[in-house]
Image 1 (cartoon, rainbow, N blue to C red):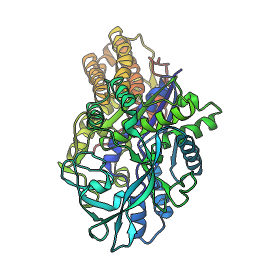
Image 2: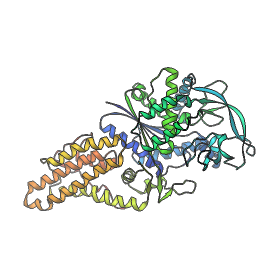
Image 3: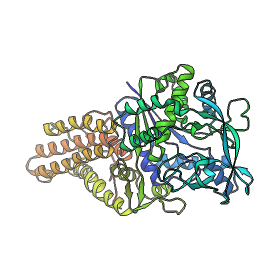
Image 4: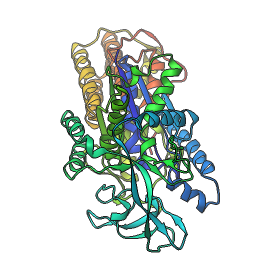
Amino acid sequence: MTNILIGGAWPYANGPLHIGHIAALLPGDLLARYFRAKGERVFYVSGSDCHGTPITLRAKQENRSPEEISEHYHREFCEVFEALGFSYDRYTKTSDKHHKAFVTDFHRTLYQSGYIEERSVKQAYCPKCEKLLTDRLIVGRCPVCKEVTRGDQCDACGEIPEADAIIDARCAECGSSLRFGEGKQLFLKISALKSELSAFLEAHPYWRKNAITFTKRYIDEGLRDRAITRDLDWGIDVPKEGYENKKIYIWAENVLGYLSAAAALCEERGIAFEDAYGRDARHYYVHGKDNIPFHTIILPSLLLAYNAACGGHLRLPDDIISSEYLTLEGGKISTSRNHAIWAKELIGAYNPDAIRYFFLANGPEKRDANFSLREFKEQNNSELVGAWGNLCNRTLAFAVKYLENRLPEAEINGAITARLEAAYPSVGKKIERGCFKDALDEIFELVRFGNRYYDGEQPWRTRTSDVAACERTIGNCVFLIANLAVLLKPFLPFSSEKLLRWLDTGDEWRIQEIKAKEIPEDFGILFERI
């Protein structure tokens, strides 16, 4: 048994989830369900990112507290993820007391390493608002690509600029030009970890192209040390004397949520934290491409510095499942312009497996992908209803009508067995490599094979001319359907669970046998046309 940690990116709890979030995060649930079916011990963790300036801005706009805003969206996130079948082992939040305690202890140890240094820094001050500004409250042009940017990250090129390097820096709230004063902050000396981070990148040539390209660019252009503390009112206190009025900078605590959630999960299960974060584990991190540097530079740097401080062996990321962008009807998703489809609205209108199928079959794995309602409806009707649903319904409905409501035992066709024996390891390998679209395509080729087999055997004719042949056809189709349900369960859990319950079959990642039995009374149609 292998310990598999799967970390899904932590969405900001400052607004509702949209379809771009779902497309980026769904692969995490697929991986968790697949590895559980294989018999591995899974730690599937994530949570809501409840600190940071975006939440305080939203709170100010709505005349509410940051706690009220973050808790409102945290609850909404939980509802959306549950409705879509996300099977988190622990979904928490950065405002959780366990996370705060873990991060505090982690930082105390971190400060003992040689990679933390106190420095004088320039701090942005808005003379009109009369306050120090966090990076998020600074707008201007990126010093690298010259496009419009915020102070925390450039959406155009992914750069994380220094506040005083931003061209024409202004206050995001009032538009005033800024002044820069002096202050003290703690810095993580990422530049001192260049050789370790370079070796880390070289050891993972199988990452997705965007992860390799972004990470290599950050290293080649010169790694910059980053402040890990900030003058904020909302966040986790800095556990260091003289820093009582500062908070841990959000990027230096939210990525530690994977560790804090895994630690809490280990405690619940009565096992050692090393089982999840030690040498004998495999780690997947699932997120959009704008989060790549946080998972390939920031998180590894924090872990390397921590390990150096205490002689620890916390595991660095293994697999980076970094999606490209999802567009909407050909245009960029923009929450500010309300050009978005909100996840809560989508789950209220459509079958959750239909939603999962579209985003996994058309996900932005290697390039930007587009969502259109027309394509969503067409794929539901042609693939889920016309192919997979058709094979299941025509087979089981035939057994109900002509075989006295029973699933017949039959000698299984050797060609079907051979196809399934090849499919389990082949599909599994593709899933483990993050090639989810290819894996789903392979399964649906088996679905199409099943429909061709049904048509070729013509059970509607042999039911009167050769009953044994008719039962053999239906038995083979049921056998194929049961195993297709197992293969599809990580992708389409709701319909697969129904099928496996109707057929009274296990869901382990191996060939499942079928026993003769009556079809249950609640048998019905899996998918409906849109």
